[in-house]
Amino acid sequence: MSFLNKRLDFELGVLRGNEFSNYARSSLCVRRLALEQVLGSSSLGCLFSLKLNSDASLLATTTVERIEIWNTETSQLEYGLREHEEIVSSFAWFNQSTLTNNDGCFISGSLDKSIRIWRNFTPQVVLRDQKDWIRCLGVSSDNQRLVSGCVTGSIFGWDLSTGQVLWKLHNAHGASNSDQELNTINSVQFCHLDPNFFVSGARDGHIRLWDLRSLKEKAVCSIVAHEGKINTTSFTHDDLFILSAGRDNCLRLWDMRTLSSSSSASSPSSSPSSPSSSSSSSEPTPPSSLSSSSSSSSAPSSSSAPTSSNSSTRTRRTSPNPRVCRTGLVREYNAHKCEGYNITATFFNYEQHIITC
Image 1 (cartoon, rainbow, N blue to C red):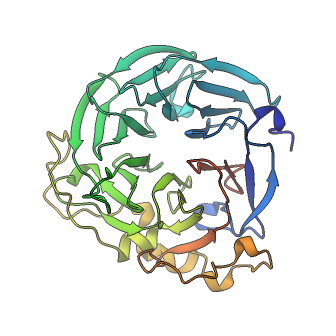
Image 2 (cartoon, helix red, strand yellow):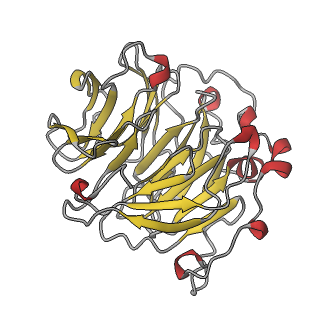
């Protein structure tokens, strides 16, 4: 592929979805997960974040040392940015469609407990009010809100126009499976069509869907998505499907409409502090794009999925972990063989491909 080559100098896999089908709203999504191409060899160790901007012209990666911005047409490194004092653990582009001047606008987070807002590839604002190690970031589609997930298990909500904390959700996923480990929030991602909803993924392997209008109640739904920790979550543009990547070397594609209508979550151990928009006392409901009424005709069934003789796409020979949810699971790739700490994954090429490292 001309899109990237070995100059990126890390192991980069491309998973192609063959035999595409039209889903709701004519969205194309990965139909079969199978490794198509490896575009480099690992020498930099772990990448902590891997994000394409809205038009896929730039690819951002974060490492222990810096933020790297790659031109996807030329495969050249455009920027190597060193502002954080520790591991750059997270990265999020602003939504380009709502910006007048959208070049170089993004947010980065670090284990130095800072969040930095960038314009024209230059840091403009530093946020430190969370006083916690930042593990992940998510920006709403209207660029008005930011959620940050922390090593200690908290999720913070921010107003990007003022830089102020709006709410804090402590111990968002409850206690870890191990008394000796924090239940770190490793991924947060807003829905594209409704900025009131976002998902979080944690060390315990759970994905939870939250409604900002009812944070005092409970998560809209919760599933055990991976045997190990969640690394990343990514919505399709129509919000009907979500891709998860885990420490168990699996990539999984989920139908969110099925999950939102059939799964439940226990309340977090503590209520959020001063949420700005959680006054509603009604039960949380999923966004309209996740309505279960539309799922029966447009969601792909596992039985109709193309099969492959490649062992990487078959079910594991060992018995599946009974904790891992199978409801809503559309596709699975379970032979990533990551040699590093993180598997990061995101959609590209109109969701016909997944790029992962």
